Image 1 (cartoon, helix red, strand yellow):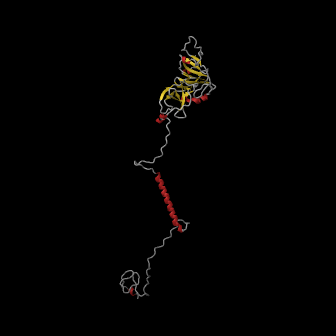
Image 2: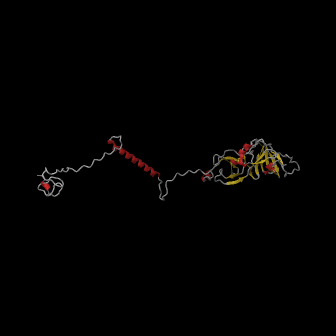
Image 3: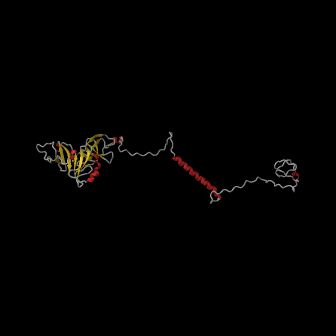
Length: 344
């Protein structure tokens, strides 16, 4: 009769002392003599180890795609993610400033282009290569204000030869300036005067008009003024130091002479004008627009307002504006322009 191991239930070899299934020693119990009908049957062990419990199936990466495309989509997603990451890293590295050996940033913001300094001296090469470009025949102009005569037709790096007072007549030829938009008068002695300081001979300046200049001796006025004055000066026994007014030979201006010199000039003719084109007949508004804050005003004791501009303490121009708002006469020269009644 077959016998079975009490430990594992395997059938025992009748001649073996140990179980061939689990190695346990054969027990000397009553189990060995039990019959099959009286013994409780033992289920034989499974021939193979139990399989691990089944795992739930993984959810597909994309619900609407076939199962065989899932791996491809995942691969594409990973690839795109990698490209974007690499691009972001490259951009970050590009934007980082490069450091030089001193540890400071070697990539700086672009330098701002500086505008040329309009007052900076011109390069020496310009002076070395300069030659005159004449633009006119010889002519005469009047200094409309204080002017500098220079050794080249530019204020940038040239040398001042002389500072000249208003009212002086100068003769020369126009030449092109270092700035082609400007002209300079090259005088006979080789100097250059900027055109902005010059005016035509008939221009009214603080020094005079018609080329007649304040402080000119009476003897040098002969031929430019009438020989007999308003108060009949010029006759025998006339005191040449006394105040007298003479008309210019063309009748456009009167010249006041004091102490044997011309001191001021007056015109009622619209033919003469200032460098800013203010003349007899101009309105008070035009006068204010031309000279602005330079104007000083005084009430005229007879009519209207007297407006003054001064280039120096003893050189100026007076504009008499009537109550109607227009200029009816202009005087220029020394402080004798303040006289209300001329020589009286």
